[in-house]
Amino acid sequence: MTTYDPVSLKILWDRLVAIADELVLSLVRTSFSMNVREGYDLSCMVFDAKARLVAQGTYSVPSFTGTAPRTIGHMLAVYPPETLRPGDIVMTNDPWMGTGHLFDVTMLRPVFRGSRLVGYTMSVTHLPDIGGRGMASDCTEIYHEGLRLPVCKLRDDGVLNTLLLDVVGANVRVPEQTIGDLMANAACNEVGGRALLEFMDDYGLDDIDSLSDAVNDHSEAAMRSRIRDMPDGTWRNSIEIEGPGHPVTLAASMTIEDTSARVDFAGTDGPVRASINVPFCYTVAQSNYVMKCLTIPDLPNTMGSTRPVTVRAPEGCILDARHPWPTGGRHSVGHFVVPLLMGAMADVVPERVQSDGAMMNVFSVQGRHRDGGDVSSLFFLAGGLGAMHGLHGRDVTPAPSNMTVVPTEIWESRTSMTVESREVLPGTGGVGRWRGGDGQKVVFRNDTGHPLEFALMGQRTSFPARGLAGGGSGALRRYEVNGAPVDPKARIMLEPGDRISMYEAGGGGYGVPDSQDA
Image (tube, rainbow, N blue to C red):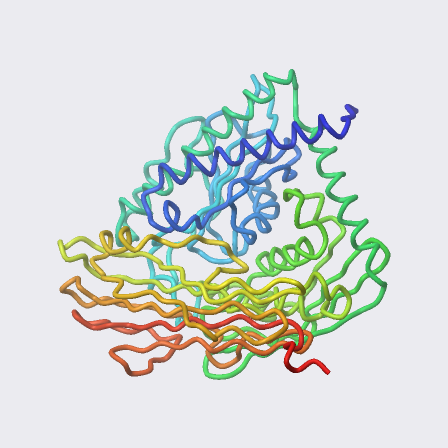
């Protein structure tokens, strides 16, 4: 087995991350949709020949990176490594094999050095459309939500599966956008595969398995060392969030034992007849994200950092929803795993936890452009981040997903909607020694000349982001159409000239405000 001194390991590891970054850059520059090109709703990764995650792009969505190791397992169960050939590209958008809902596609490309399989590249992106009723919270079964693709090949030995593209194109509203994004995923994986082989040539490597051993073992050891610093014991937390007309309870316990951590969601409510149910793969990803934040946030992600953490949930609960429950808005519940577990660990590692945040807000819009073309897209809105010990929460910053802001000029030109105003809402973050981040107000006007259908998926409309250690709660999220309140989870029709105003929630504060100190 090859061994690496710390300096050599750092150099080689950084090069692997740079390869994943090259995948990201290629993907963004070739994508057709605003979701990817402007919103960076994506992840790109490199795996070794044993299907172990060894590097991810620096700018990647945590949940996608967290689900990817399970996805590659499902893919290789259908297409075992010995059956793969150069030029193959495997894909799926199955919620229970992929990222938790139909709107994300995962693509995998095997990398061959001659006739030998030496690794894989993978990309995940949120598609602008996959048919059905679109991304919303009001579907009652998975079949309403769109086209579900089992593990299949987009390319087989280099030959493009045109029938598959025809099927996808026949089921979506803006085919050139969705097909363009699929081909962008294929292209970036080609670039990543070439870059990996160039890396191996530069350093005279016959494979990357030994390097992957070193990287993953280092990550695991670092994670276990930080867990060992925590006291042994079990800590619990529960929260209520908005469900379809009634609250939903999420419960969790975190057990620390020597160098391992166990997360258990016993006590969590069952699934609901709305598109907010969460497949277990997404729950695991969010749990691992929390543990990474609490222990080794400065190390790049690998599979090694997940080895010390086990996760379980009661079978069939809302955090382990099974087919055919709808999951299109799974982020609306799944993102709450983060404040749930942060709250459980608040007394254990008070200087590392974060108060509740506003949570990423997403809405989808479908209709017609003023020039007559179809519109089908998403917009990401952020409220305030929760504060931490020694750090105010940032204003208008997304979390736990880290998508970027679609520029107003791009949004307006691609949708014919006008963004009348965007402004920070001072004082909406929770009070505290360190205050929560403020939310924002954004006003959209329908200037398409056609009705536009908005699907809202707003959380934090009844239960605010809570503070920690005596910090106050943030302000709630709300929506108005032409000045009148509307249901934050409704599917609404915005007529020409109508305005929708979105008031984003504030984050929770941390610590008792100085004026209240004894």
